[in-house]
Amino acid sequence: MPVVRNLWQRVYFAIATLSWGVFAACFLAHALVSYIGLWLADEAKLTDDPIAFVYFYMTTATTVGYGDLSPGTRVGRLIGILIVLPGSIALFTAFLGKAITDMSGFWRRRLQGLGDFSERRGHTLVVGWQGARTRRLIDGLVHEWLGERAVLLAPGVAENPLPDTVDFVAAQSIADLDSFRRAGAAGAATLVIRGGDDDETLAATLAAAAAAPDAHIVVHFQDDGAAQLVRRQFPGIEVVTSIASGLLARAARDPGSSRLAAAMFAGNAIDTAFSMKIPGGCGPLRYLDLFCNLKQKHELTLIGVGHEDGRVDLNCGSDKPLGAGDTLYYIADHRIRADDIDWTAVCRPAVSA
Image (cartoon, rainbow, N blue to C red; front, side, top):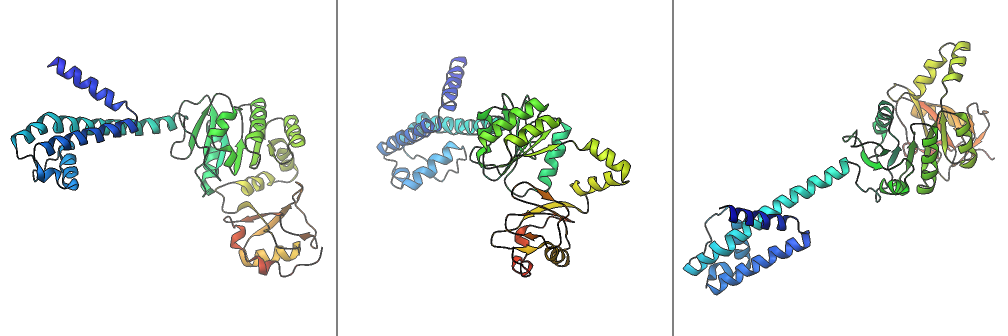
């Protein structure tokens, strides 16, 4: 009947749109009314044992109906027809619909960039989306990254372009602080920023400096002027600019230089460049002793040293003292982490500063 069908649809919709707390209260209230009705009908086999009643109620609600427990009196069966059956089945059906709707809504929100990852820690946050360029960047990051799943923050993107690879936060603008918060910038280990142009990149850099003061921030600028400005104002931020012009001149003078540069920083090359920091409590030690020890024991080639003041030395003197906090740049066929090295043996030839 249309009237009954419309009434049923309204009841179902009202139940399905309730909060989970109210929904649970409805379930408990109906179960309690069912229990009282069966108890008044002297259905002792269904009400004397609470477990038996819950079993009977759930097999009825799920329409399994094993038949081993059922009302035996006329009144009990009437209560089952009028109260237990329609109410429990309606509530269970609404439960399934609400659960599926909420789950699909949760994943749809994440896919559309409306999720919240503010509690995430130790992840990489990529800011800005430029299609294939950003895709290659993320592929390179994910290739080695073993920590928390990376997050992409980008304005003007309707849905996560790489759902199998990263989580996604949609932003009103590339410098939106609330979007940085939802992307977990405060707990991120690394931020990589590349806007559509230098103005976007600069705005995102200022926001990132405020949202993630403790993270390692890497930004890409096309113009050296903007890059120099950020280097002066934020010495701790690592700024990358295009080296194409300089590399072109170097390749003209030193044939093969471009291939060397490409091999050193290619993520899928057999031998490529990596870095690690000398841990605390180690040093001082001579550069030449460290070079030979690491080559002999770990098959890596030391090519430079970065100091805490930002200087990078690519041609250290053989007696140059190094110590905790210095960054070692090396070439190897895979990344070797500081924890993989027996620093006690490496630091044995230490000399005084």
